[in-house]
Image (cartoon, rainbow, N blue to C red; front, top):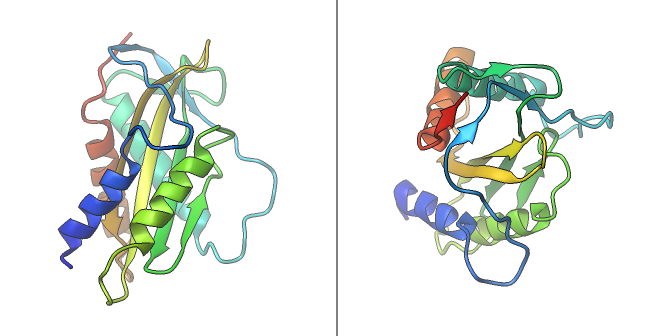
Length: 184
């Protein structure tokens, strides 16, 4: 199976649909915001199997901050006009892991993880693969309505330099947020 076909399968599985399970209602239109904040993570220790996760979170947050700053939206520690939760799902032919440190509590978290699990593990490709999906939400800071949800999947590449990894993450974030319309 080609990598592009695998990524298409994962993206289709995460796309909103009418199947069973909770679906978040996404408001459409322009987002009015001057400031944003990330979800504050819980104080639970990070599981040992997540090597270097804080460095990856820092790269993701830097990429999101850069993208939104280019649109005139400034990062604040708390109380932003919008909150930007994000979810990382990694997986292979056998299993998936949802890394939700900065996603917070959401009714559709289990559904998103379940759909990713099905997409990652139901491939007929007998070859081992590893992939990751980044999902980014933009939530109104006053009424907590979901204003935007986007995601992208990529094969996981090992042994990248920190600079190459950061550039790859920036590319993914820019792809996810490319259609977001934000005005002050």
